[in-house]
Image (cartoon, rainbow, N blue to C red; front, side, top):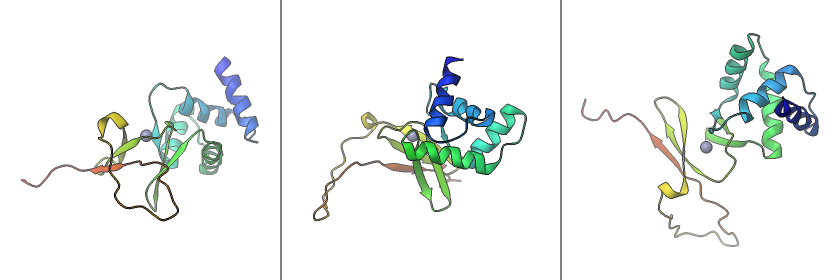
Length: 141
Ligand SMILES: [Zn+2]
């Protein structure tokens, strides 16, 4: 209950009317212990199923983008037509399973420090976030 009040405040802070559907979006995104990677379409399906009612793509889209803009969610671009959002906003790496189209977190401890030999004049490296694409190994079949 206390958490829902927080969500209502959070939504108001973003200038969004805290409707039942938007509070539900908050619950799905932020009432969890594990990282959640999702596309807008995934979230529409999940909310509609859990609420037993249809939620519009526009509502989900606007709410998610408002959260992303405020830094509560992180956007991860797989390619030009596949955008994921991540509830883990810390700097981290990912595996991307091309078979299941699933993102899996990969931490700094799982990768040795990366040695970047090229630099861009006048620029410094802000962060290095690696995307490791994996697929079934069908070579011998
Ligand atoms: Zn992640």
